Image (cartoon, rainbow, N blue to C red; front, top):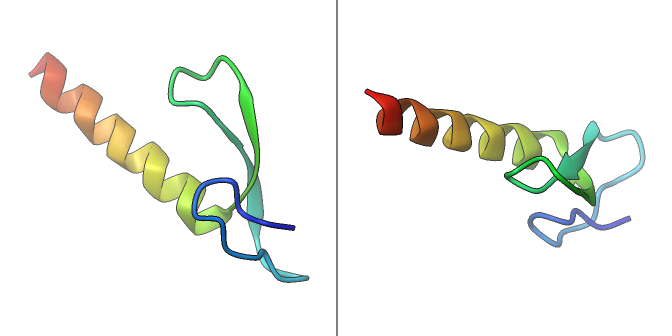
Length: 52
């Protein structure tokens, strides 16, 4: 299976998450856990900067 965020293969036994759009309205597909969580962190920081 391929990571919907980076396009690289997700190998058997590797941690993965079900990704979603930044507005959280739709699923995008499987993503490496690192890709998904990095994107979530970046979005969180962006929102924090917006409101401070």
